[in-house]
Image 1 (spheres, helix red, strand yellow):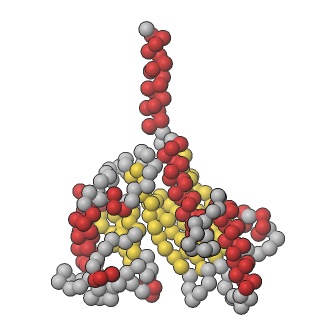
Image 2 (cartoon, one colour):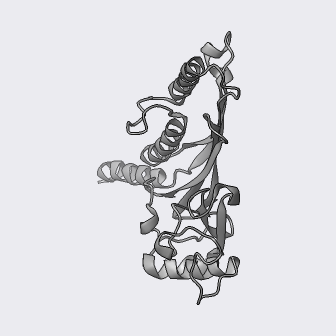
Length: 255
């Protein structure tokens, strides 16, 4: 009887151990200087810092793949209607450099080198949620560079990314709450149109940004440049205290 129970006990302990495997991150840095092709020929600056997670394989693979794909997409300069095909960050960086060299050959008067800076870091973690902040800044020609900030929100048990609309029990209810905070922050009366102070909300109706994430104290609504205002206005951000939004969320922020 004991011989029959022992294997089952070991299997049970193995399963429990897998579930308790901690999600650990280490910071990885990469730059153009790591590419052999930049040892002898000058390259545009590329700097990338990002977390790489270890832990339960299925969980970390999903998170790490999402981070890697963000970096590859950011470095992609070819046909915007096509998806990038680079299989690694190094390959994507080399393609960025190759595209710069092709453009500089076509336009010899190009006076400013291209560059790309990508900073990715964990911004918040609870028992159920992992929120990652993904920032990029680059110049690829034109009057000025481009910068943006995005968030990736993941179920910490499965590693699957949570779409913005799945973060909330009732999206419309939370949107109304967010609008109240937005109006308060920008001194817009509830009786005035949301664009009365110069914002660009489509159809004069408030909506949530594409970038929604979390930091240690708040839920963050981040509107990137051009999303609801001019480039000169810069990004626009609204922070709502976690304790004020917890009841509207489908996931727990309890640590």
